[in-house]
Amino acid sequence: MRGLPAVHRLLDEPRIARFVALLGAPLVKRHVDAALAAARASGEVPGEDALAGDVLARLAAERRRGLTGVLNATGILLHTNLGRAPLAQEALDAIAGAAGGASNLEYDLDEGTRGSRYDRLGALLRAATGAEDALVVNNGAAAVLLVLDTFARAPDGSAREVVVARGQLIEIGGGFRLPDVLARSGATLVEVGATNKVRAEDFWRALTPRTALLLRAHPSNYRVEGFVADVSGAELAAIGARAGVPVVEDLGSGALTDLRAYGLPHERTVQDALADGIDLVAFSGDKLLGGPQAGIVVGRAAAIARMRANPLLRALRVGATTIAALGATLRLQLDPRGRERIPFYRMAAQPLDALRARGEALRARLDGLDLRVEETDGYAGGGTLPLAPLRSIALAWRPRGGANAGAARLRRGDPPVVARAEGDRVLIDVRTIPPERDGALADALEAAR
Image 1: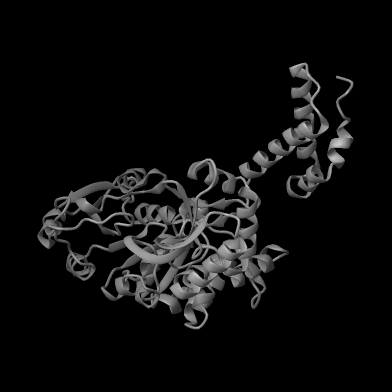
Image 2: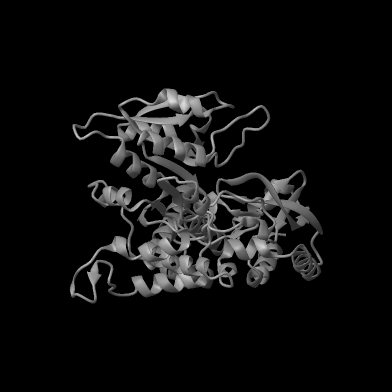
């Protein structure tokens, strides 16, 4: 084993040394030590290149285990597994400004006294939605939980009833099931209607003195079609108003604008729900809004005030970086000319001809690879518009060793590229690649050949 190189020689190897900036010197040294220990245990002395290769493989795997940037070539604009909504540069700048030093997170600069973090976004959300008041928590599930805990728990701690159409008892990604959240909040679930049909009289028959809320849930990642009937938001709001029972809508996606301008079907907006008379509307910040992960509740001021007084809110509160990023995103949403600086809208707005030109330029640059430029379908993703394709352009690559092997090489590259393997081809959708990263994509494909 005396033929093994010293630790410092491996640490000075340029390919290994570059990982110090990415992972830190102690972690790099630990992997060097592990590779040397494995060589000693094997009883054989590997060559220095082979040993360096083992260290590099360990370091690359370590980097992939941590949070790292990837190129999303799936054609899914809001890919839940890839971080959902990319943030606008304005949002990134706002994060840096808020997190790089002290901020007025809970300080009133006018009065010189303690302030409230919940006041930081109120004016923007009121302007963007038309609601009387608003509240932000750490994600969409937390928003629903806070609503239920506030309104569906009696003063003595006993459960009250929440009425939901049977076809809206949704499950979304990560095992989030609406019935489970209802149970966790202490509410008693009352299902009405059938899976495919619910009518206004079903809600009327379900009302009792213990009814706390009427709840409407967005179907998110599925659709029920064919022999169906539903109660509209306006109808449900009218029932609640006559019965004196608050109506809540879990809208999910958080659209603030008509998506038909971007080649997508119209999605019910937050403004639509409020105009229908819904008392409280909950939605996500990192879907069609295009901001950071957050749960937002807008609606009647008295109802929001009750939620602010709930002690559970402290466990669900957001920090300065979320407030900063969401504020910057809302300012872009309020400016029609600025909306397309939000990456979701910039991706959706790219014309097919421009995407095809980018695809052809990449194909010409990578002349040695088996590439074709083809039309394909992408999707909004993130639990929105599940059946609505968005025409796009992809590089269709037939790699050596088959599509799965080629896609794996792309994922393990630098930067990692996540694409779709279909049959014997890897489809690399350029709509979800920022144009300024086309060079990095070309380098990654060249390295994966």
